[in-house]
Length: 77
Image 1: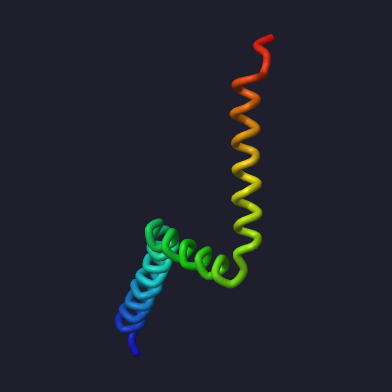
Image 2: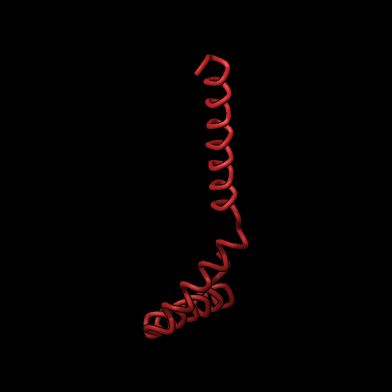
């Protein structure tokens, strides 16, 4: 092979590598796709064992009610 052919082959490989990297970045930064994956994982986890989800939801509700009560009934010093 001559130098020109080697340079063309290297450029072609570099373009292919760049395209692969850009595709990987696009996939990683695709927010709707990532949100869908997270939703599917959460649904699957809930279907396998809903108890931690129920306990967590109850804890969040109790904290929210406590914060509202504190804001309403707390003294304005």
